[in-house]
Amino acid sequence: MQNNMNEEMLIIIENFTPKIKQCLHQTSYQDREDLEQEIKLKIIEKLTTKEFENTPSFWNFFV
Amino acid sequence: MCNEYKIIEEFFYRNREQVKNPIIRSFLADAQNLYLVQHAILYPNDCNLKMVDETFQAHYQRVQKIKYISNLIYFFSLDFDKKKRRLQNRFLLVADSGLMDDGKRDEESEEEGLLEKIENEQLFKGLQKLTDKQLQILEMIYVKDYSIKVIAETLKTTPQNISNLHRKALKKLHHIIRKEEI
Image 1 (cartoon, rainbow over the protein chains, first blue to last red):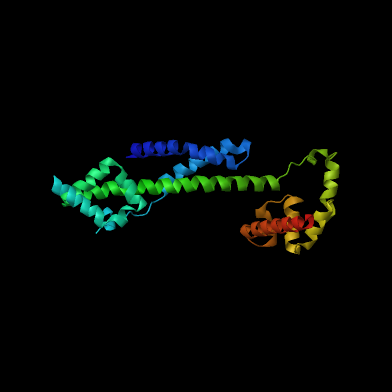
Image 2 (cartoon, chains in turn green, orange):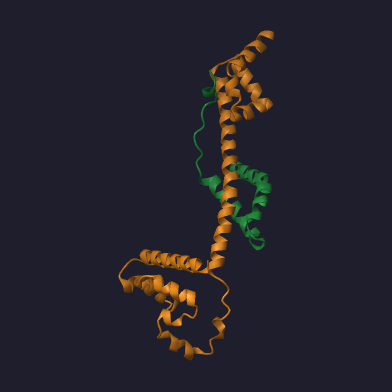
């Protein structure tokens, strides 16, 4: 279970790397590496702690 | 076979509005999911329905996570830059601290209050507009170099209060000086 989660996190971060790189332009050149690291830390923190809402049942959508 | 197609088609026709829902559409875009759903429509027993539900819920959670993280990255980078800028504006490079000739002069000036030390006219005017208490706290922090805790004890209040007053004073000062510049 733990391994599974770590793997999922890695995949998510990898998939989001282009987006992260794009957002690095928000800050000045010398802070970009810091920001990249902070973002990744934040993602890991949120993925481990945040509880996502309950999902509706698929059949609720249909009659 | 023909009959099966008919049932499925009828089901989707009946729910054509729902199928337009982005979450449903993205779920059905996966061939495997579509197959599961079709299977469940044809043979709607508990096991089949549950299987669709479970895959759908995994899909839904994944979408939620992606959306959340995407927003997180964007707003976090904005905040990060704001924070950096604020710190940079507050702690401008101080190049004159080493120019004080010796400890003697340092001690001498220790006796003076905060207002006597100010050379910048704008800053002086700004400081005069602060309340006595705010001035007192600024003096203790920047001239006497006391810690927040010690100040709180001398003024018989809490460190949080001192910290708040300190922050408010700086903010007010910043405001006043900005206005003067314009």
